[in-house]
Length: 129
Figure (tube, rainbow, N blue to C red):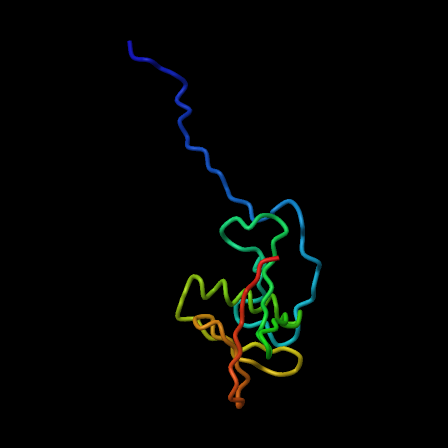
């Protein structure tokens, strides 16, 4: 005879979970004016590539004498969400960011930022904490 062994060959599905049991970011209300058509970024501050729990991306701009300053908290999550979008679609390289009552343009391809109407262009960087 042929072996009649139980027939339970259904593949097991492993669903990835986005909950990373550990450091949950502090609850922050979304700042006004930065939510657009796709809503607010949920897990934008976590990075791909296994940065490990607790690693958070901080966006900074270069000020005179090579001093780096973090962007205000009112736009960090927004910039990170747009950077994540740029990672998947390199045509999305420019984003206008509202922070502290004014708007700046960030270029992810060149990693620069500029205030409209102003000639100076500053470098930006993404630093993992």
